[in-house]
Amino acid sequence: MRVAIFGCGQLARMMALAGIPLGIKFSFLADGGPDTDTRCVDGLGDVTFWRPGLEGESLYQALNSPDVITVEKEQVELQLVASLEGLAPIMPSVEAINVCKNRKNEKSLLDELGIPSARYAYVDTVDSFEAEVKSLPFPLVVKSISDGYDGKAQWRIKELDDMKAVPDSAIEGGVIIEEWVPFLREVSLVGVRDSSGEMKFYPITENVHENGILVRSIAPANDLTQPLIEKVEGYMQKIMESLSYVGVLAMECFVTKDDVLVNELAPRVHNSGHWTQQGAVTCQFQNHMRAITGLPIGSTECHGVAGMINVLGPATPPPRELITEYSTFHWYGKTDKHGRKLGHVNFVSDSREKLEEDMQAYLSKTS
Image (cartoon, rainbow, N blue to C red; front, side, top):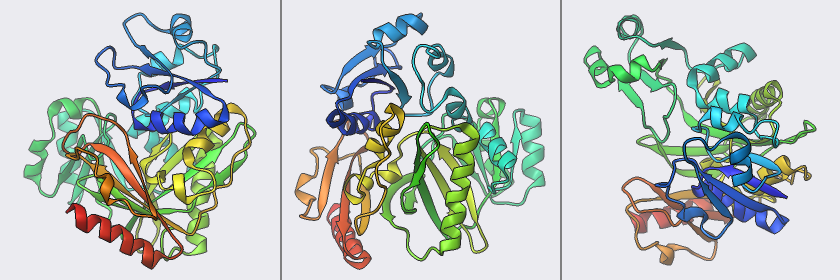
């Protein structure tokens, strides 16, 4: 069995590390061309560097005729992925990737399914942008419909003058204007579905972001009622069924005083699910491999309480000396850069109090 992955980053690395023990071989597409940094996947499989004209049958052969094709990111060239349809199953599907890579498509799907999200407007001209902003109550968040991650391609508007920070080129490419959500907490749900329709969900994870970047997570999230948990899982079930989804899907949500709103979807393994490597019976990476290769989905049960802290650049050399007997260190081998995710540390404990103590002790040593 061979799996081809679009992308050569840390998520591709961790999928391969989880899949190799299952007897899976891997090929990776460096879709950025010859300048792509492939250090995350060095030694884990064959790497093909994309070049103009490499698509369809020729790309399939260059990837060593994979049995299944998947992605580590939604920001891929859809036409390139679609050129492989009919040659091997693409999981999740091109349709699912297309929904999740475009905020307009994503919002439309949520609307169709009756799943609540922040109130929004879509615009793609400067005139309509100004008119829409002036008609909405501040504060607002403006998001590019594509290419936004870790807080990139997003702008906070607290007053009219803040509109000037949004480039005309971004507006003309299409933007979503959202009302600011006064949330109490940010949580995420990671789930997995196989081709037969079986679904399993990991415990809902509580996340903390700084400057749009996830810095730490704890699962299970504290003080969530069973009705709220069932509501969130029901939302993901609707999404997965509507897309005939196969693989791991992540859904980020805002918990407000009155409800829970879906913020974003990711058609892939997700940073907020890294804790599953030590904190769950089967990690998200292996479950993705299981789902797309026809193996039974593994248990998503949690071992006690688990947490994750991202290691952000600058961080060279790796701060290995900070790990403890109840934490594990995961280093990606990427080029050091300020704010870049270079690795993460997972924590496990029998109690939330002890877990938070261990995580705070780590953070105090790195601040």
